[in-house]
View 1: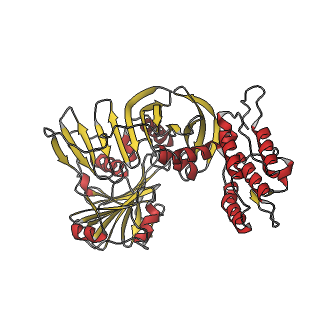
View 2 (view 1 turned 90 degrees about the vertical axis):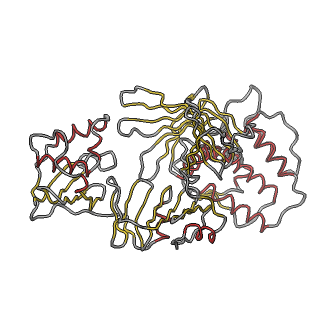
View 3 (view 1 turned 30 degrees about the vertical axis):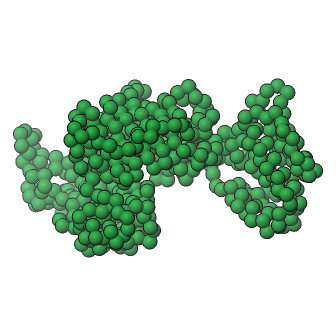
Length: 530
């Protein structure tokens, strides 16, 4: 509980006892000189009393069923202690394991209402406890109508050296979002049109509306904090504001930190994990919420003397029938209904908000990205990249991109293998490559420091290996090998196989020996001569 009270002012526990006694005696809570943190508690107590008659037992049971899961929700945050629950209500609430259960014998409405008052005090932001800061954030975000602020993006290396990368002014109002950089580049998305205005070049570029990336979106980051496991780390001061730091632990990802303003209960700073020797911090150095925004900030009125560049062939469709006509393709449909649809010739896009499904008429052979892990889509390859899946199916090329790629991909095909496995080096025909682990370790450190990034690409590593087989003294001028002669045929993220159509080497086998993620370098472990 919050112990920051004026001298002589009752604590929340004392106020709670007082309100419960009045409710149990069928009295009406008098107006009390409450401080700001307790106004919600006092208001709730008065509202409880306004019920003219005792509700039915069915209503009380239904109400309890709705609030009971709030206490039972698993979390790495410890639930508040119940030591301070008044004795008059301990008979009302019964704690069993991690959940609060309603007694089989119903009790009077006043006592039930008082018990809910206890529950809400313990499990809501009114308690002032750090354990409830995430729940408070959820409520604050629900009440967030718009905001205007300045977001600073800072990069920090392992030596602790900081560099301000950019400061961006941001306006957000529902689905409308606008940003303005220090250079005056204005980008706006009003839900129907997304464009970028470059005053220096006098150009306006039309962009796809869907999957508009935001560096630090308040609503989205709050949703992640609620969805992922998290724990309280401690208190900090961020841009002059008292904040609570929580660590978010996304499944399968690296933990990162989020700071929540203790006054507004909104996220004001995000810090990524250290990756490739760099850590990025996003901070709202200023933030106004539920404020008055200029009416024309989200209006699309291109100046007549500006050049228009259309990089958005896909237009919003009012119905599936209209989308089918505009695209001219017969798409694979999903069980889930998209929020919006976009279409252009030979292409249709289903927008699910956090994820898109793009289906395009396949006119060329499928070529996976060289950095992709390769799964299986029927008899063909499945390109697997962070938050992205791509494959060919019948006469369509399908791209699923966003937060729920596997979930939506499974609605499109039942013949996808997301977990490829590359076996060990074959016993016959392969010449193993002698490996100096110390050299590999040093190479990994060099890449972490920002040099030789080509070692993160298995095709580049294989290309260099084969080129040096052709020119052992080194490569000068044009390389002795066509890069297109290499084809990545297998890649499970830890092992890869590349076929070479020309030169002295037929097949190259590679592994990530030091680090088995996207930051790990590739090393040739064996090859098959031609």
